[in-house]
Image 1 (cartoon, rainbow, N blue to C red):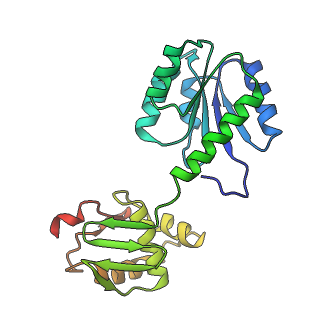
Image 2: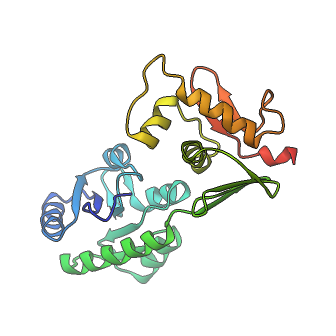
Length: 237
């Protein structure tokens, strides 16, 4: 997601070039950055929920049905979706909303109304997707506000950098992160091929959160790739 200092980034999947150009110009003049794709294939290739803040999605597209895409996206992402359609029937609106659309706007529509609806879903999305400040995985509890780590209720001592590293891994639990991804996330810089600082910190974290640091079940090394915090580590508890 973008920060408050940046323009919200909107992806629009719409094959009507005149309409999409008008919408992009109007929204752009009102503080939103719009990227337009004319087909589902182009839109799927361009969409990045970590970069885009909302999606404007037409129902009738040359290479498929926007409702099918809405259903698929909603199973994978919480990105706000505003659907557009020439079909204004109530049944279609209900179907779109049931499939996971956040709002539904029949054509023809006013760009001003679209802007208002986008701002509304962006506000709701910001509230709903406010980052969690507490992560629990099995007996492991990480509190970002207090910057504490508990294992089975007992405090564990790690450095500030190690806490940030553990928080990044916990926020991506189940996903393998490379050393470079971790360093970029924490310091905004890459690691060199012989830089093993992350390895040292991971070793210290293991000593704090593993019952046996030599046979880790929580913080796992994926050889040649990076590290992953297991989501099922609680099975040992």
